[in-house]
Length: 104
Image 1 (spheres, one colour):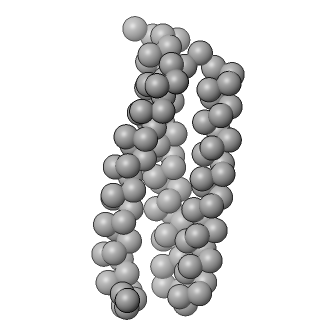
Image 2: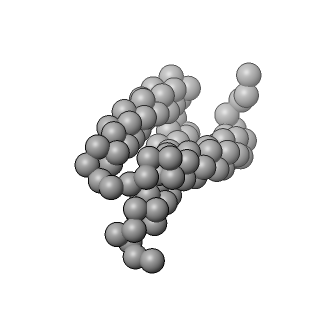
Image 3: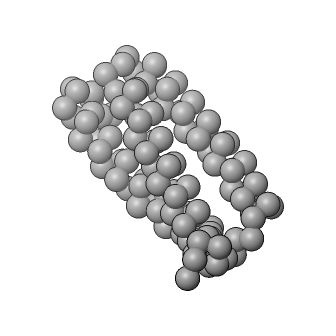
């Protein structure tokens, strides 16, 4: 099996995109933590909108211009995306507690 095999390429790109998305999410929230609530919300939601926009375009480009198997690519991306989302929420709640941010 080589990276040129459509299945391996699809799986690799999906996992890679999911990991990059997860790391960017974490970095965005690290940047936002410790800021006043209004700034936190602007950074957090602005970052989320930006990441979703870029991810959607990147996924569309991969599907349009590579020989990936769409179902494998999308499934692997969303599997890693879901895991990263759970980790992101867990880390965010723990860090908010450390920074003294009140939960409402």
